[in-house]
Length: 169
Image: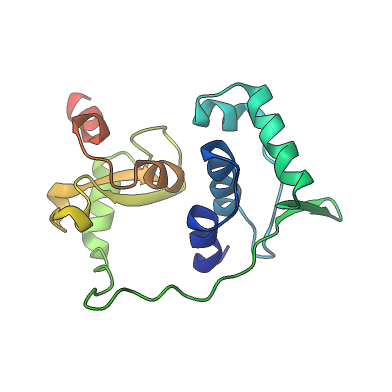
């Protein structure tokens, strides 16, 4: 899925609460090059969200009935209007890219898996968010999957520093 579509799923999609938003981000993250996805099993989604399987089934049904999810020729699609790129506020520069060497080092340190859930669709998270003054070096990075990174957002506190798992191993 394009970055614009993923941003739309995370911020602008008309969802009915955080469970639907999480489902939408999960689906957006797993789309194929044709923008379609296989409907995922409800159990892993329920476990990820910390809710019952029935809650996931009901949320998906509501999303289908509102036209947010569509089925065509045996594949599923997210009905997302692709938004134009989001302009940065005046005076704000784009985030610095993480040095590829640092990225490799961080993934290696963290065992090439999400430190929160063990998933594999990896991204690098700032333990102390850059927007809140966190440094942009190895000392402030941890490996999270895209869903957990999105869920964590700009939360602060020791309970959101999953590097402790690596230090104890």
